[in-house]
Image 1 (cartoon, rainbow, N blue to C red):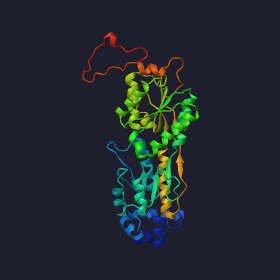
Image 2 (cartoon, rainbow, N blue to C red):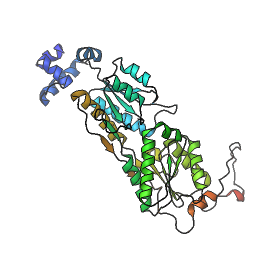
Image 3 (cartoon, rainbow, N blue to C red):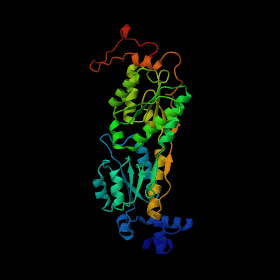
Image 4 (cartoon, rainbow, N blue to C red):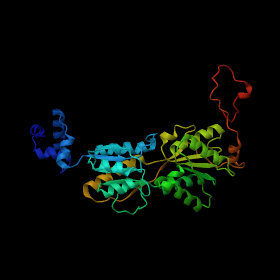
Length: 374
């Protein structure tokens, strides 16, 4: 720092302020100091700065990464949070502890490896949050506990009430009255998983407010779980003419079951994925209309809320972000006349022979595709 100060013709304290933002530095002076730093190859030593300031300049994000890893939608949040933290002079690290592993999170937090912790996949009675708060660790929630009115904990979250209301309104506006909802796995409801609980309540409330019967199923978070959930819906009487999904892995199963049953989307069944991303929806055939999760906005808001708490000790106002509709063509007007849902459910699945090798040459006439399949 002394070398930089001499070469730039400024005081040592000016170099320090340029690095830390402790006091304002004019744009011209900052540019001169940064130019000299580049010329000399100067990089601040993070460990030395941490000893001097008692700050690690590291933020931790605890997320219960399962065997399948981060979903694409969750990754949007994580990448945004990491980018914003770096813009603010911090680094973001991932602590992949299970939601119930409060002791593991607390043990690492007490070592002073991070200045504060962002908690994702928040549950109604979250042991991680209680443990960190009890130890005096600054915390910000990406989600909400049952105690939403807690004035000491910053929160940012998806506005599930607005999102599910928008989903039902979009489909009802297209004439659908039989609108089913494929939620996360049922054990998540019992565990108090925030998104599962809030989405279930919001969907039910919106359907009842419109005088419609809510039909909700809980799907295991897998392709098989999604296929089973949709099969049950299509085989019911009456079957839905529209389905909302909020379970990324199961959504792929929904798309697979539709393909096997040769259900035309959206002519026979409309599908709307909520709290998802167009990148995920684009991996199915056909691509699915989504209510895009505000991952980038929540990532920025979460980091800024935690830094505000660290800097001033004041808790910023809660942030709720609704999802945004991205129409990829999988929703359309409700079918007229015939009960399209029942027809779709009655159509036999296309047989799949996983063992037979592909053969060249023309197919027998009976294997030609129907015109409607083409």
